[in-house]
Image 1 (spheres, one colour):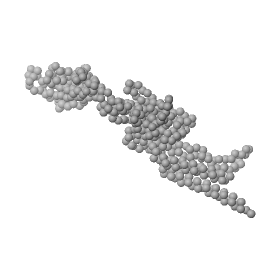
Image 2 (cartoon, helix red, strand yellow; image 1 turned 60 degrees about the vertical axis):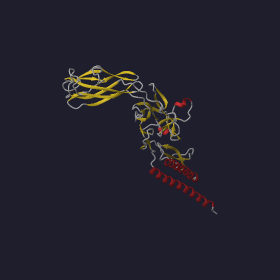
Image 3 (cartoon, one colour; image 1 turned 120 degrees about the horizontal axis):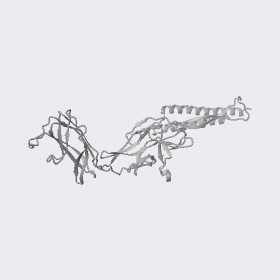
Image 4 (cartoon, rainbow, N blue to C red; image 1 turned 30 degrees about the horizontal axis):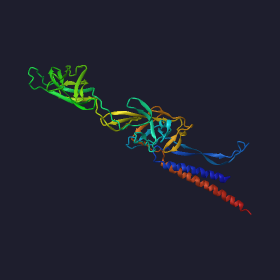
Length: 403
């Protein structure tokens, strides 16, 4: 019987070395989780044997190979589509060449966040498996399925409809006199680039001249201030602006005539040099795709050359009631089983899900020092079981040599 006991020990030690060797081999694999071999004693059952019989065991067996889903270190890579999960959760993946309903439903789960865009704009890993989540469509709708970024579509131009200007007008400026219009008087001006419906830039200019105590005319054509007058601004004795009410500023491009809402909120008249503190408008030209930005909550934002950003997709993570029940299938992936339960999707950073770190990868949680020590221990166990078989062989040999 000792031969079988020693043989079971050899098998168990060999399996333990296999597990340790796999851990060491994947010490540099992003998102890899270490495993451990768990053993159980084998007892030969005897019908009617009492509890105090002192029955000896007949060896050992590997009862399970368990995975340890502790957090790995996060290493910065600088690649936007390298994603690390800081906390619980898995990336849901759609298998390569999935057919039918499976084309839009994930069945693989991974902690490895090495992703890139394929030639169709899908976010995929090195195995060609597509990342699953929520797409934000250009018409404002949403769709659940493989995440796809349309890098060929430009950001359409937007007509300027609001212009904001904030400045200080020098209270010491000379007053323009309509009786002697040819006498030089202080005049200030500023300009801003607006855009028409086709994204054509238009240089919109605004001029100001003082017409009396705490009053200024605002106009667009220095050659004809009266005809091009936009409004008259009035300031309080403390230099703050009296609300001029709703204003519009006309501008013209080769494509037509337009007008934008004009806001001078916050402008002042102090005894200091003229200066512009705010110039802004809400139009933009046509823009081409330049890159992506991914937030900790998994929102993927597309960036364009015109300075605009558009939310394109939402990454979702999936968590399981019992992650150790997941079945590894290679390629850094797991599949759900009855033991793991059904995966629950959600937004990164909410409930029990971790956040997503863009430009970084989660390292393997394998501790090389600990694994090397474990390997030496398993080697000693293997050698000891070999010695058990050798000793039993010597004992039997001595018995058969009796005369």
